[in-house]
Length: 130
Image (cartoon, rainbow, N blue to C red):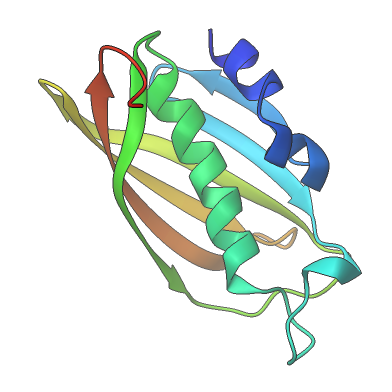
């Protein structure tokens, strides 16, 4: 189910985000930062980091085969990211209770240094809202 969901994600495809793994409330995705992703300071725009973390969160929260959507999410930016770096976002399920889930995502540079921490709260729905 998760691979199919990810394969239909046009945004991830257009940005070159790759799914490395997904199982048991966990997921890992990667993205190479391009020149089109930088802000006025010459570093990666925070929106792309949020998007990468959100992609990992989406996969991890949907790995159980139920429809999970983001309810809230928050990110803390810790280090700048340069063009050409390939980032790795690793999501892990912290807890699931009833219809709610909490997931943490860590984004790392190729040298292993953490560049951002993300926390997402999911909610299970029976169908997609209109």
